[in-house]
Image (cartoon, rainbow, N blue to C red; front, top):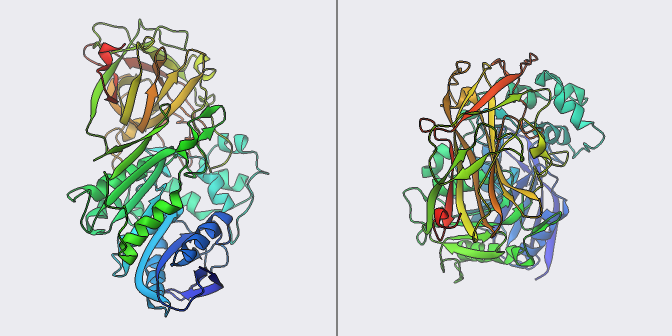
Length: 556
């Protein structure tokens, strides 16, 4: 089917701002369902154009719109706050055009997923369905804060989008910029004055500022079928899991008007672009014909075509290392069992050469492990500069030579262990500081010495109970911290070790806590903290994994 392109079409929204869009539609006259993508990354970007041609050739009108203040759209770009009404007005315009059937869908990844969810909570009458790719959740669960810790790479994202066009960020010395303090000066060190950066730092708890753009709490009123897609190394994976669970809550997961589907592959944030990360290859079968799968979804909901959308279980995920797809009726899969691996040591779990271990047997009387956390020398998080991808299945073997990293490992496995589901660390710890962070990372320690990251998490001490009302800690008092390491699906092979790292920083993924307890925007005072991790009968620190198959205690 031939495609017609209407370039730089202006759409006036409620406050008079003109937003600019490119419209790809079948050349043949007629009315067609409409698919809308709204993005800050320039509508002419190749990945958007390729998909637009595909769907136009499949009998859809495909609209790619620059969001307010980006590309050729008028206004100033201020993330998130204009997307609900701008999206609503765009859907209204699209539904009324003479080439439109009045049935409208949305699709987009990352910020393009955010634009969908923010609009969806307004319940537009013409919005029929969504495909949400690599979606973050509400704004204090992952970005710009994760359990109180600030995501520093967002500065490079804001710098790149500062102004009307996509600007380069590679001339900036990010290592030194992100180490500088106070944080509220960092945008100026990049030669910018960015209001969003200042506002995000000022609102360092889940207050009414973030509440205005929250959408997870509105899931029950978003009565739409949604296809949720992410990757195991998508650095906002948790959003897809939260959104899927929220939309399934109290609804049927298959069949009916509000069908939800979940697809997770062996992918980075740019989903389905590769299943290879450096030396780690999760197999060519990890790359799929995602356009065809998405077309089936749209064909069913927008054209009423009989497709495979309703066939099979609603959850499909990739098991890394086994390098095969698995289906499930729900997430987490019902065939998993939750097991606890307890932290054990003789009070000397520092570095990979220490005596830390993971065991299915609860601890008895054991001395705590101790390390010094110096914010001026944070533990590195392995990642490329910038914001496009935060980490992958990287090798942390050299990082584990640091004395401020506690390392706990199982004995070499007697046979393969398959996990599929959440990863949660329950940690009993104390700090000499007024505030601090604790981090956790799950890894596969291979016989060849490669120590591969699966996923990680962080908790800022004063946010241990609430993201809304932080509460100070008493120095040297033991508290329980729950660290959400999100999820994974992976096979730990025979003779490999399941490994857990505990520390207090992950730079530059998160701002190193200065341990003062002060507001982060203007804080410059740095204190070295003595950290103690407890694992005894009264304080049974452990990691919880979801295992498919035999009990771990039978195979350790």
